[in-house]
Image (cartoon, rainbow, N blue to C red; front, side, top):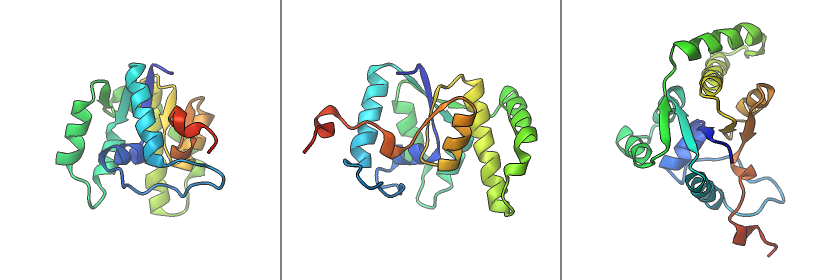
Length: 168
């Protein structure tokens, strides 16, 4: 298990609200997202892995209409190895380098451009924090993370607890 991982917005939302929306289960994949996510949290804790939460991902999670800082922030504070990482000077430099190299990827819409910038901000923080794995259910961010040499894992790719991974 890596020493430092990053939770993107959708993983952070799942931490705060186990009923948060996720992508539909792919055909042939068993188990539940809740079982997979709970197992991940246990494994990260047992391995004493530091979980990085980028400040832009926290901001994005708090934009949900039902999100409350009073619900989300205490959860993060209660987890001993969770750290909120700021978009600081080093991250800004990384972001600028990535942005200059990838501006042609943005979509024609303003929403696409904003999402593109958020993804690059999260990737910049991941690089500065020396993260090896990004947990995200965002397929575009997964693609970008892998292109940057990081492992990217979505909800349905998480391991099931051992008793649930056996054939039924």
